[in-house]
Image 1 (spheres, helix red, strand yellow):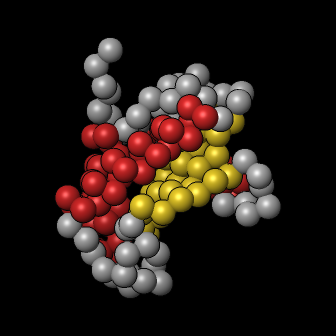
Image 2 (cartoon, rainbow, N blue to C red; image 1 turned 45 degrees about the horizontal axis):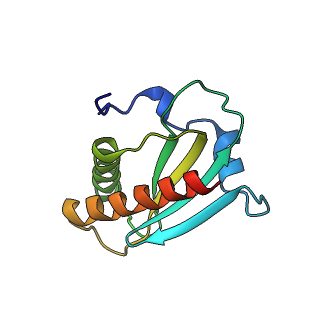
Image 3 (cartoon, rainbow, N blue to C red; image 1 turned 180 degrees about the horizontal axis):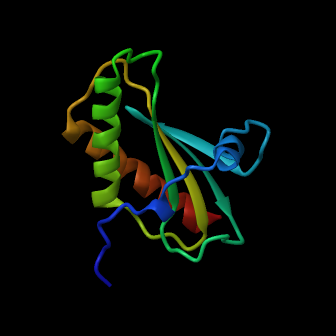
Length: 129
């Protein structure tokens, strides 16, 4: 099956409840790792609420580090594009948050390499759980 290169609304996390559950530090389901400049926080559920093979994803950039919305939007656009082109299929329902942690705006190539490494680590976590 050819890789789908879209990033539909079903793949985006928009619900405040889902976001809060993903960032809940007390939850044992949530796991995180860092592949500079992207920190990845994810949660894998055994019972998928959506019949979809792609994880639900959100992208975040700190407004504290990047005061200008232009810079934040540029970084988010680069991260979403890197995800869209390199996304992975998963067996279980996965919620993922990609958080940009670098202090400055990085080139797209560096963001894409970090995204590829993050997705490969995410895939290995998905197989082991």
